[in-house]
Image (tube, rainbow, N blue to C red; front, top):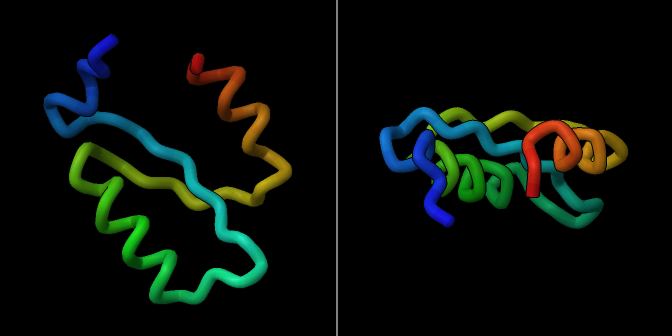
Length: 56
């Protein structure tokens, strides 16, 4: 199923960093997801809530 907001650059992506991720890793991930909208960095413990709110 296509993600219409992402197609027009208005998507929202939540990401979290792992314990071994560097700032460079985070910047690379943000650059990738910023291509389709806004990127929000959250704590891993909130990822289930984000999935529930945004649908899967």
